[in-house]
Structures are given as C-alpha cells and as structure tokens.
Image 1 (cartoon, one colour):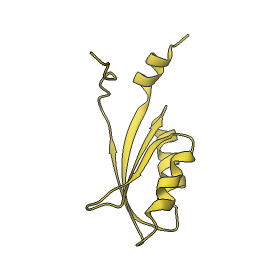
Image 2: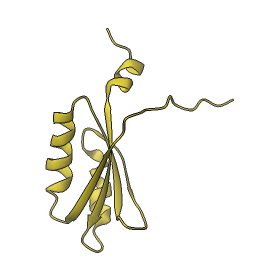
Image 3: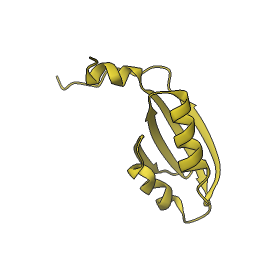
Length: 93
C-alpha cells in the first residue's frame, strides 16, 4: 500500500502557460475546479494564466491538458512545461 507521500513522488506535474482572448483569463483560472488541476492563476507578462496540473500518467496529463485547457474556446495558445523534479515540501524551522 502506497502512502500519500509515495503517490506525490509518482505524480507528473505540468505547468501550462496559457494565452487567452482579451478579458477571459478568469475563465481559465476557474478551471482549478477540474480534477487534476492543483492551481490556476492569472499572471502578467507573455502569458495570461498559469495552470498547474498533476496526473498519474502521461496519458492522463495529456487528456486534462487537451480536453480541459486547449479545447477551451477562449484559449489561443498553450505552452506546457513538464516538471522532472519535485523537491520535498518546505518545513518550518
């Protein structure tokens, strides 16, 4: 039986940078309610939003990114960064 800590180490994490139609980034940020989406924020700069997704497999990750983010009608472009290292959580001194 795996512990929660072990499952976190096995999970894939992706940072999806999203460009949307003007004035629609809030809709993408609301996507944090979707299973697998751990965090979503509107940002300033080259992209309009960043969505952090965790999944157990590349196939699951692809499905979430494609079906839930890229197919959104207001999304113009996405760029996905897949994390290769998950540092342990910070613990207070």
